[in-house]
Image 1 (cartoon, rainbow, N blue to C red):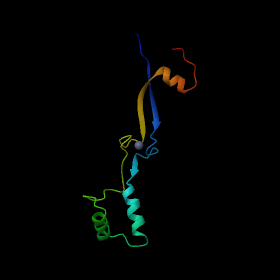
Image 2 (cartoon, helix red, strand yellow):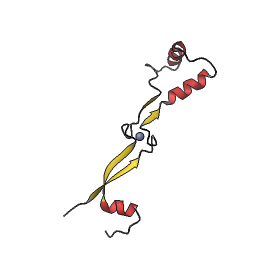
Image 3 (cartoon, helix red, strand yellow):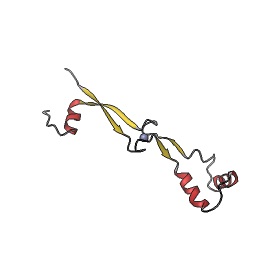
Image 4 (spheres, rainbow, N blue to C red):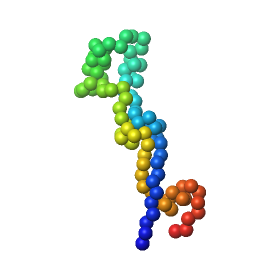
Amino acid sequence: MKTYTVTCTEICAECEGSGYVDNHLWRTLFADLGDGKLTVEFVRQWELDHNLGENIGPEESPCGECDGAGKIVQQVPLASALRDLGVEVRS
Ligand SMILES: [Zn+2]
């Protein structure tokens, strides 16, 4: 018995193809900062106030869903691909 597969490539829904995701903590920090000036001291105090246990991390990091590629590549059965494309396939 033969099994046919095709390669399916999709834009990653998590990062919308950018390969990076925002660190939501920074959004909260900027909201707390308001019109104030962003300084190292403000960030350190903010980290202490929020009990992070470590530093806040980068503003964005590689997407965990696509490992930073921005797309998901996978092998799918040919019949599934055809059905996805609207082709009627006998089982
Ligand atoms: Zn992604």
